[in-house]
Length: 325
Image (cartoon, rainbow, N blue to C red):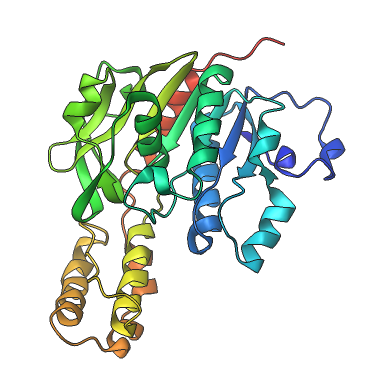
């Protein structure tokens, strides 16, 4: 397994240090749109899953950001060291493109600050890359751009680990198994019935919360939409809950936090449910959240989807032929 990060550096960076014998099986561009609080973790999660999914094949990674997302000083420094602007991506199309989700700030997706740049990127990719994997908000954006489908706001956040139905004959589901569970964390959705009516295959879906993965051809590219979060680590959902609960008890967030389903080990569920019940029924005491052993509980959280998420990415990459020189 080889992953090169050298091409994630700007043109002025030390690209010449790469071995002349290095010949990647695929080139991959990762566009990271997550807010500062999750930016570095999201980068790490996707790169780890790409590492695992590529197996013994060499994978050349390049990192990009959009211009229209405001950044703080720390993340801006990281971007300056490791990332290039999306405009540079168009000069050298990769084999595959991954676009992460983003923090939704507008009810209408077309009003998101990066909308114009997202339309340009995905429209270009449909003609220029072999496959693109779009996560969460980016997946919803693609459905609007390519199919005219609008995301719908949920009455409450969909968060937790949910059992999936698997279409065993789908190429993306080979070796995944007859059943699995995947994390979800989102405020919006597009109904499965609309996805299927638009011509998408749906290899992974949940009877409780809708589709997790959907795919079809768009122009010259295989489009893979992922509404779930297979890249998440075992404690990601718990950390998201910790963040929301802390904001709630501090009064910087009026909306009550939503307790993710099955985000901790079975032995810790009662303890977490007790905290949630206490802070959402009147006692908005910051000390209750501060004193809760989130780190210890997170360290015990199970990672039931890791191997199957790796297989999903392996299946996706194996369906992308090596580009001819």
